Length: 499
Image (tube, rainbow, N blue to C red; front, side, top):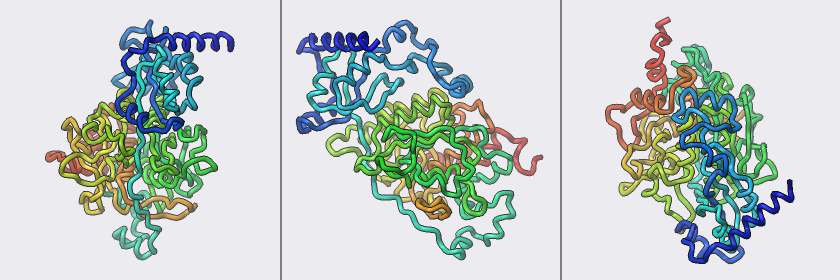
């Protein structure tokens, strides 16, 4: 078998060498620019897109269902609420001979994407020259990387008296509710989550995938009851999403996950604390460009295949490497960025994608969004403070093609979170990184109430019940989420007091 595979690779490479020199360039303009300015031996990150899916793809008619290895849960979700209701040609595996042919000529294959029919690689300019000549390579493009903005402020837990004042009541007074939310009460009350909890919904049976910079402190008390179905580190290629000897640290993911799914009575409760979770580490915090889009796309595809119902992605980045800014405001049109394409493909398959709008603030001349928040079927979440006022750092729209963005808003100032590096400490943090998981938790509650709801259904009920549904703008979109009103729109018989 190895001899046969090796012979096939040699034939492919030989065919590549026979290509005429006049063949038009397969490189994107941005990759051409990157190669022109790179040192001869410097490794670049590039997408290699293939021409086809081989014999299996050729035999399948457009839109036809195919046999691919997807989880039963993923297939059930697609059937219930996907615009693509079953497995499609896009779900077919990559042609192994194509992948092997590329792998033989590059430093490393990083990620593989069935949906994009592509692999991302580390390759020198000379190796990219060779790839371009391969007949099964359709085109080459640069893997973009987001730069991290200013660190999101984190303040350690205040004193007991300050905590009581922030809650607006004595600590003992909080316990009059069925759940003792501690200082997370304020951020949940603003979006009316306790009302849904009182209806009996806490996220049971819903699978939420969290894409972030890793999760360093899963031994924190707030995660003691967390049910994790799967986890994978797309930066280092292993199944350990916590801190270790490899690249990146996961304090950011610890905080966002606690906001969404943590549970410690009297301290912090997330909107969907009873959901099941899939954890993906997609960012390398050791680098100035911590998020590379191939990691995000691969993680979204993986999570969808495992049956995720919701993706919560707290990126909050919109700046790309200097010189390669063709993903600037004009390109945030819902069709261009690779991460946006992957998010849209997940939504087509019935996954509700919730993403931070970004922390780039207001600019009167253009949007300040970050991909994939520009997606037409991605819920981009802005940040407000405790009074409902938009946070100055919260990114604004519209998308480049004129759609209102962001879509919704939730608390993103002084959000109560698990304090990384401790087993029982808490802190406050700022950023759309936290308004996003609060909203994703609400989405999980709504999907528990209505398991057949499509991403468009979820977006529709959230928009129609939000705080400024009748006066949509590009600062807060349809406004602050109202989980109780959205739930009552679908389950009037379960409203508090109606039993």
